[in-house]
Length: 132
Image (cartoon, rainbow, N blue to C red; front, side, top):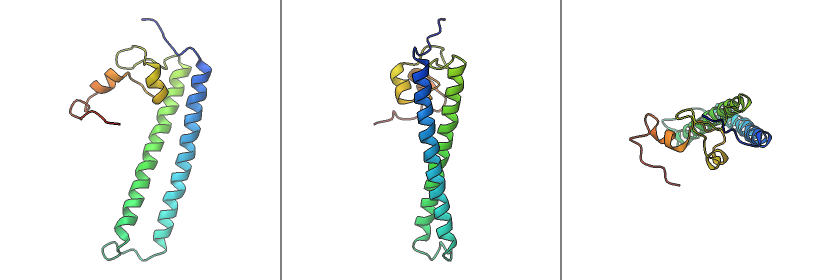
């Protein structure tokens, strides 16, 4: 099996590092948003049952917490992609061992699998195809 690592190692590293910096900035902004929601809630009497804004505040807090968790997961994935790049394993599907198409890596630079293996992953068989 030949190793087919992206030709321009430095441009890949730069793209991953830029995505990582963007993700860190998004995490910082989401953390500030979450703290602001919590602080604003602390200033008012919390009675979700009788407060008409209580449920929307709880939803907003949960929504920001979910976005924050997704951003943190993305940061981990980008760090792992940088590790794979250093180990000359970046761009190789962890499922079948084939090269991940450059187009997929352009859209999802932290991708660990090719599209075929991602679609065959456990739990994916019963899901409807994603529509863009």
